[in-house]
Image: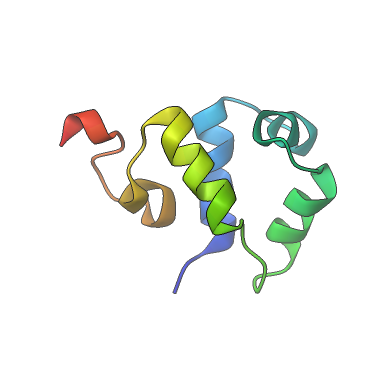
Length: 76
């Protein structure tokens, strides 16, 4: 099962931001949505949002979803 808090934590690391507001600006979504992801374990980033992250940053799905290495596709 996906741990959404860990996914959001990786998003903070990936975009090198420390606030929900800064992350929301990077992702083009509302801060309220990020807050919901953190507070409610049944909520998670949409597949569209995660796909955008993958395309923009070059990270692997395995790293984003589960924290498994390699982090970046070019390391495969």
